[in-house]
Length: 418
Image (tube, rainbow, N blue to C red):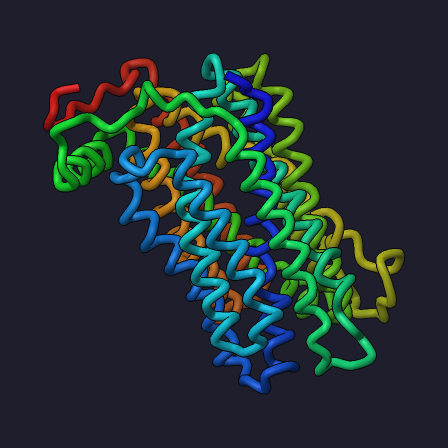
């Protein structure tokens, strides 16, 4: 089996969706300019994306082996390519809603299939953890690329120009390339083929039995808490930069990209380190350093004197220090996902990936809401000091998760007895 081609295909698939999923902020701004919709109306685009991801993940998680991982990814890439082609052809707000609904549904198929396929193309737990981190770092590179790609097509001199929609031809082409690469790459799924005689109810029952296994419960709590923390910081960092550090709005957004860049770097470096070091000890070290950064950066933010800031060179030190937390929290999500997946039989990677996507979506929504409410009621510094709570919880949960692992090589029994 051509593992390098499959791995390249998985990376390219993730790259496409990183750009699309994280373009919501840019698109919200543009649809207000182009289609005259209100800010509150434009904000529903986030829900079209996130709720669709969670809903479709729940539907397909137990069903994915019936479809096949490769076929599911091909369907997702074709769906999103068509939605991208429709955007410049039918420039309306409902088309934009359709695009994000298609992107959410497609990403659910992609993420469940990609996570499940990693087990087919890696040799052991260390290789699994390493590639998972490379994959997630490539996702963050896609996020960064998206900022520059969209900005290249925006006409600053004419806010009402729809020239920016041309970017979707480029994205459709990338999705088409990913489709052709995957189509021409053989993927051996014989070890995870669906069992004859099992119906959809049996599949759903298997997933629910998996979900209530003690080690899986501890894992989903860990994943939920991590995404809650990460999304709370990521969603509110531009506001923190603007309101607490007194940066201009454009600079607040630009400097928030430090978090995405440090997260990408953190996952890339972890991909190298995890070939030699246990995931548990790496994450313990990272969490302690992340907590230290919070305690270092936020007092620096308190001392900002509100003087005029005109660019990166005159920005306060806290604007550079706090986003570096991404470097240290970055390895957590891919490493724990890899740890739980590599402790399961290959046949159960699809349902487990579905649970990961569902609880990640719930954690992200919860984190953004909690941070927003604390930010509004008690201020930005208190909201970001709040990140010490999930850091502390993760130190406990990951220790518990690690202790449960050796006894686990999970063999969750199903209704068919495998």
